[in-house]
Image 1: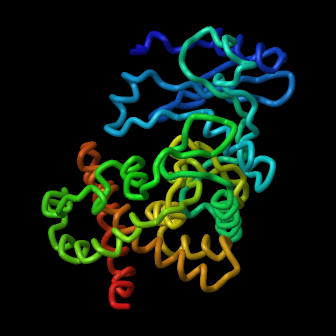
Image 2: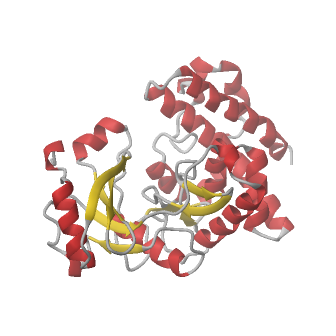
Image 3: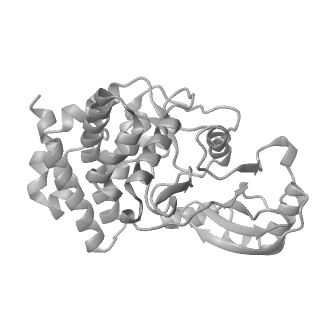
Length: 333
């Protein structure tokens, strides 16, 4: 098991940049640390580059109860296609899994190298209506990428391939404990303790949600579209980062997750940019509202198990309540 002492230092990161790019590295410094990845920013004689390094297993396990390695090959496979098409992603430069780059790093942890993201993160209300439409068009381009299988993407750069044939399995692989696909009763869910009046109305969605498990085809999903991963410039969408949770699943999942961070009104504006088809807009919104019930329950459970502050749990409960109310009409049809 890799230990924290195996993390590379500035010298090792600078050497890697020099070996890969042939440029002289300057001022390597940590850019940030997520659940699965530590990022370094390195100046060069050209543009700055960002080196992504997988956190050791022990550190990942301590940060979350769901350990999904970053799978840099799959991430760069997505970036390869988006950078050549829809754009608004970092430029992929190198991956330690490529044969040509094997042995260049002076450390054993998986790594990848990309260009620096343009723009800056902002609060959810910092993105303009035009930016929301741009995000919708970008999500549509992501969902149009060719892929096979269902579930978390295999760690390879030549194709977007997932290992499963069952959508329920795919959803649980990404979100362990996702009701109702985990087969449990909401009586055993933390929502029964935290907001008991929501148990009965949420339970009504069980059969409708289980129909998602019958889907045999999916699309490539970012699955974690939140303000930390959307870089803006004057309210417009500049760059989307962090595809470590990418998987093949139902298209509406990206929209449901987005709604949990940005609200349903902004998500509707995103859907306006997603497609010009009125029928598809209505379909995606309805599907997202249904999946939003499951996502809302998952977020409450995750916050509760992770002993997050009660105010954060209450925000997720408020999203769940609003989503149940919005989606109730779908059960009457």
